[in-house]
Amino acid sequence: MFRSALANVYRTPSFATVSRMAGPRSATSAFARRMYSDKPKDTDAEKTEAATKEGETPATVNVEAFEKLQKSVTEKDAKLKELKDAYLRSLADAENIRMRSKTEVDNTKVFAIQKFAKDLLDTIDILELALKHVPKGDLVDKIANKTLVDLHEGVEMTKSNLLKTLERHGVESFDPIDKPYDPNTSHALYQAPIAGKTPGDVFNVEKRGYIINGRVLRPAQVGVVLDPNGN
Image (cartoon, rainbow, N blue to C red):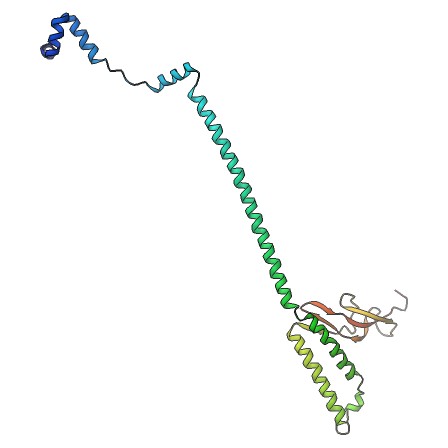
């Protein structure tokens, strides 16, 4: 079978021509050179070897590129962290401003009538003073002293109505009588030794105190029991 294939090769025109010109041995060599004359392309190993001969190894180039890329990523991460911190600080500042603004608005609403209410307290003090100076004995006989009784009731109703109006707006009165003196809510006008009273307690209230939404609008004006020993 091999001989038949070889005979066919010898019978080809090109081979026959070469054979006639160079003889059988030369024809065989020419055929072998023609069959294996196409060289394969350079492999990676050959390229690496060529680059090594020139002094530029691919490994060195890859390390430099990696270091440069790593440096760029590190710089971007630092910049991103800086921007994130600035963003969070901005959010915190905005939230603080919002809370302060809300507090100011709420306080404005709550204490909007503070000055007006404080001005009304003098009127209430006058009404209470008028009621205090009416002898209670004159109010017993409602027929004989009808005019005085009616006037007293009218003043009492006016005072009560004013107090209720203030309460609807967050203003409340307090009376510290027979309670320990508190300098945060009361103002001591005088001191006196009172038998049967505990030193430091309030024994008289000249003017009641008022608070507005938990804040002292006006301290009570009181008299305080004095300790006989001076303590």
